[in-house]
Length: 407
Image (cartoon, helix red, strand yellow):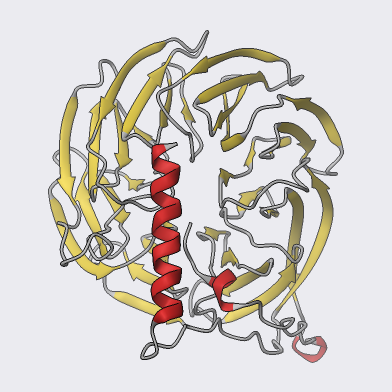
């Protein structure tokens, strides 16, 4: 509750400053113009979890998928599995809990966390609740599951390792939480024998999976600025790992490459993102806090391209397919960008509701869940030049207060 009150206070303060300032204009979201699409986007199926009357809290209720199923959760307690090919419901479980972080799947489980500090593990085959446990705080990001443990972050700065079999705590690791922080936490990432996780104090830590002992910690961005708002530098997005290299980005901070074994920073450039970055074929794709999509060379951080057509549209983190970068916005539009050039290639509508969580690529499909629990599965194919059609223009913009890219 203390953390929730703090985030509410931050939001009120930011909106109050914006409303009272006569000198600074509010950044208007870029308007979507008709698009000469090079992709035809087809919605192959749609489904939903029961979240129709839930308050839109920008929760970490992302989709997860395996070879044949898609798993989703809603804030009102609904957890469901859908057939990846058809979207048909395989099972549905009503936990009656205020779900806020998930889903994660692995080891025959589907795991979801709650805003009142609980973690549920459901059987991936039939949705039966195998166990539930209390953790130290609100869960706002999916867990990660391995044969050895389940790891998750809570908002009080703790990284927990739990038993896969019954959820009992194996160990915990803690970093100090600043007085003010963004609403969100980083999802842990497994790399060999260590767990990597970002924290609200601008640090990334590597922790031994066996006992929770710290291997190293790196300050991605030292706090700077005169006010607590200026000093926000949360690392809320999961790191990306490729071989012996770790890539991360913070809010009002830097994007950086670190050594996996020591945490040494090899390169770093100023950047700001709370959605994060994704890695593919020696290229980093980052969604910035103001809605730019940027491609960087992984070895040097040099910029390849920057797409500004979606500025201030509250973009989700990006996902990558073979040829495209995919992100979604505050009006429910899903955008495909050419990986080589950053050009907009296609667009689809997932519903008229914000998409806070990153799209998920599963097989030949792109899966999206919006903040009301509506799920869309899309497939794409090239459009012949002579048959290109314009995508629909954006509907009227919503009031500026609803367009704040806060979490």
